[in-house]
Image (tube, rainbow, N blue to C red; front, top):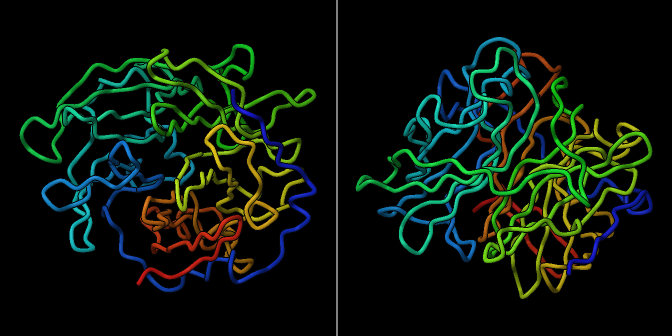
Length: 354
C-alpha cells in the first residue's frame, strides 16, 4: 500500500534563487516545430522500462496541438494529440494520432504512450468533455487506446478507446464539472504509465475547496484499482499536473509541474518542475533540494516554459509558453530548448544539453 507524502508550506519556505534550480531566460526567436499549429505538453513513445523507443532509428513523440489563432488559452478547448518524429534534431509532422470523431471526448488532453511487447502502442490520455457536445465541458476521463503500427512506423491506425480508471471514490474528488477553465477545475488527467501502474493528476478535498494530488492506480493485472495518493499539496497548491516517475541510481524520482498562480497564496513559489525521491514507487517520498523545486522559471520571464517531462536519459522537454503578457504576441506554442538534469540522491542540478 502506498504512503501518502505531504508537500507543505515548510518545504516552500526553503526555496531560494539558486542557479542549480533556476532556468536561464529563453532569449531570441525559437523556430516553430509545427508552423501554423500551437504545440504543447509533449511526450515520447517509451518502452516499458521507461527508455525512449526508437522506430527505424528515430524517436516518435506525441503532443497537444491546436490552430495557432485567437487567444492561446482557447487552445485547450480544441486540443488534439499529434504525432511527430524527431530525427537529427528536426521535428517531422506525422498528423493527428486519432481520426476525427474517434475519441470519446470533445478534445484530447495530455498522457503518455508505451510500446508493448507485441509491438502495439498503448496511448494513455485524457478524454475531456463529450463527443459532439455543443459547448465544452470539463469532464475528464482516463482512456487507453491500443494502436497497431500498421506496417508504417509513425502511422498508427485506429483503435478502440476504453475508459480504464474513473475519478471519485474513496480518495479523490470527481472531475465532472460542466463550467470552468484552466486552473479553475478539479483534475483527473495526465495519465503516466509506470511499470503496470498509472500516475494521474488528481484533486482531493481541502475545506470547501480542493488541492492538487498525485493519484496512483494499479496494477494492470488487477484492473487498475485506485489507491491512496502518492502525494498531496497540503493546502499549498490546487493544481499539480503531468506527474511521472523516473528511476535513476536505484531511486524513484517523482516529478510534476505546476503554475505559480496555483499556489496558496498565489505566487508563493515559481512556475516550474517539482520533484520528490523515494527508494520505492509506493513512497514515502522526500522533496528534492529540500523544497521540491527542480526547475523554476526565472523571475525575468516567470511564465516562459511549462509542462516539463524528464526522460529516462535525464533530458528534460517542455514547451515555450509566455515571454511577456498572456496574449498571442508573447506566446511560444512550440518546443522549448531542451535541458538536462543531474540527479544525486535528493539533490538536483540543471545542466545544458551537450
